Length: 65
Image (cartoon, rainbow, N blue to C red):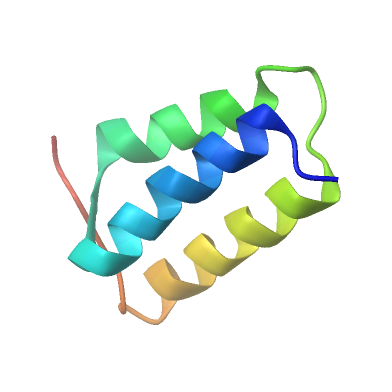
């Protein structure tokens, strides 16, 4: 089931992927949003893993800001 927080998380992560860059403040927002409802559902876990994989392989660059 796709939750409201999951949908917002997906939008933010897709923007980072499209831009190939994510600011530290955006990354922190993603983490806070994922934890906002007290649990990370399966959809959110997949999104977070995808983002972290893209950061690890440098497809998405994490920058100050």
